[in-house]
Length: 177
Image 1: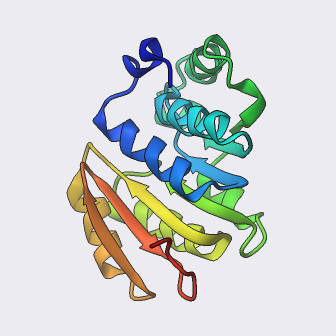
Image 2: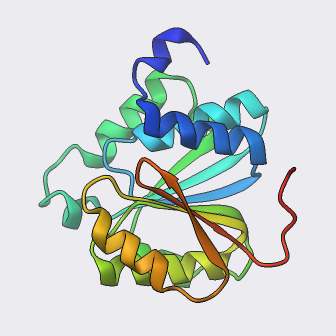
């Protein structure tokens, strides 16, 4: 990754970048885009992998008080870094979008949308249904709601990876060792 792009990404985004580099997903969904920095980390990793398609979903009007510039700001960032071929931005509610996806249709699902317990729980349960390999859940704003949702899910297990990241292993998947 070029040094000038590293300045855009903090430690949290480097962990996300590293996971995508290591697991090399062909198809991935991101829930919660905001300004697009996580999208950028994922797309940069896909660029370095030589393949991958990220579908990034956000309901900018709800999450950002209807302010203009949400998707435009994210798209501008991604375009300026030359990773547009790896990403598609979709304006949609996370639950509606996930419910329309087929079971096991994505290699990885990254959840960083709703930050309270109920939204995190709903998004994560649907993400588990859709993901083939694992689910990454992140929240640096209100760790209690997301943490409690992750701990309350009984299917499989979550690993607290630190910095607000939780990793969920989809059962019957072999981890790279």
